Length: 91
Length: 222
Image (cartoon, rainbow over all chains, first blue to last red; front, side, top):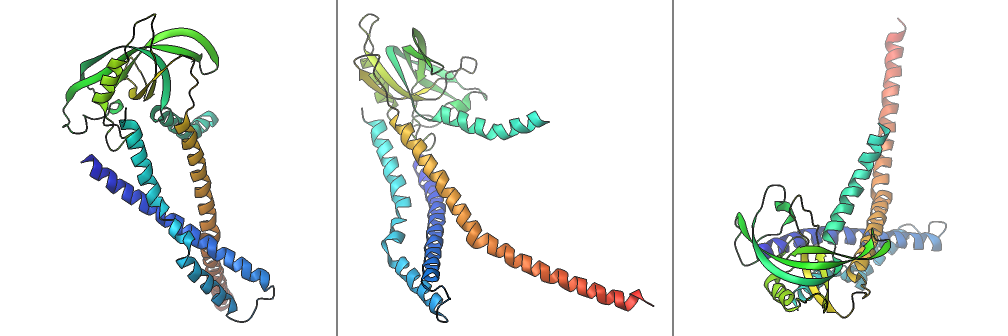
């Protein structure tokens, strides 16, 4: 049936998009943490401090709002489909 | 040869452009003259330009097709020059169903009723904006699919293509994001990978060179 096909296709495509966006967001966050640490410690800092700093920052990111916002990748298309459905089919 | 290359490079853009021109919604100002149903015997050439049977029905080789006959206000020649002339235009009225193009249209019968209600005579025109996608082609016998109707007071009404505006803004943002994501992936993942691979290659080459020189020393002078 058409509806099931749509759900399957959307699920596959949006999962790919979700993974790409979250990998990208994670990578950008890590890079920002690295840059911030290097700026504060031009001489490299204490041994292991950089790794701890980045690990802490990433732990914050994992529980933060930004990561949760990526779920919008699933929410928005469903809302758009619903919106188009309503606009097209009301007279 | 150079022209062939140029054409091949142009080809993807032409295909994408034609696809967008076909699938994105466009608006015509028309006067509805009649509605009708014809039996349509699809051929291999024009089948692709039609949607499927109404969403609750089953697909057959031939089926009835709802048509909306109109007199269309031709406003802009090639989109640049305003002109005062009219021509006829025929729209099909089909469910697009759940998949493609994603208009999610299931109300063909209602739209046909709406079209019948808006029919007007010459001289006392009721102008209507038809939202549609698709092409009219006489040789292939294909029609644009009407998606929505809206009665307007004057044929000079200014129509703002909101959907297309948002669509192109979103497409631009998506393209920028994909570019940024690719650059990030290259900078953080691919480049270090190649660097490591390059180092390994250097080591291997150095090893080979050393072994070769050892061999040379061994066999070179007898």
